[in-house]
Length: 113
Length: 113
Image 1 (cartoon, rainbow over the protein chains, first blue to last red):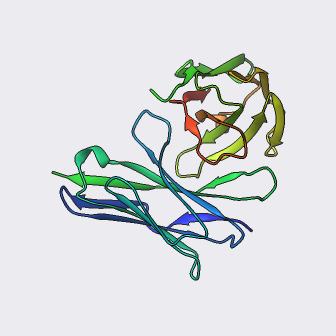
Image 2 (cartoon, rainbow over the protein chains, first blue to last red):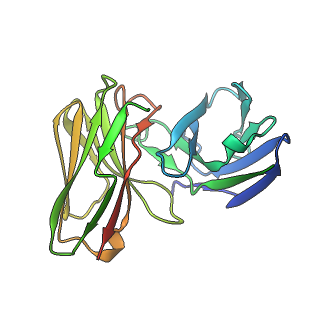
Image 3 (cartoon, one colour):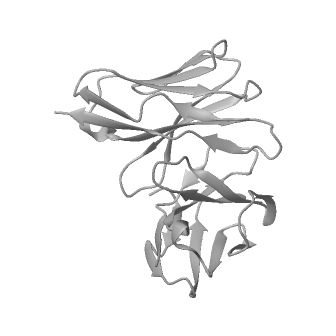
């Protein structure tokens, strides 16, 4: 069945280093992938997305990489800051009948000062 | 902040109580969603409304009853809940259900005793 999962439940990085958060998905028919950030006490917030016809997309300090061959998605955060500490979710979406978005379990990112 | 507000932020109720969660969006969106977020589990989609019409019921028990009187407001009526229903209930909106970027509210932390 469809599933979106994250490789690691927690990730700890030093302030200023780059962070890489990984995600695996199983539905090869998904055509849209999204990363959300959820800070404590808040709802998830959209970070960046990528369509299945792309393999890389860059935003401000963030880059999403998509490898359709191995069904792998990653989020790279450059020069990680304390404000980046949060839970990060990957999600997939597509024309599965109603454009349902399926979320992964989440990775908690800790940034050490 | 995100343009999506939820009330109350915290709710404690007994199994025989009836309560309602409220969501309001100020973004002019036409799609609204209810999600359940439990500890250590991915976000679970519950209901989707598009232009006030329910388009998705993700096998949610009938003790949860959604209501969407207009595109800006969404309610979740609760009755005879179980302790395992304790969770963070998140509301989200989007331009329409065919748009993948969703804007989330802060959630209602529900505890069922």
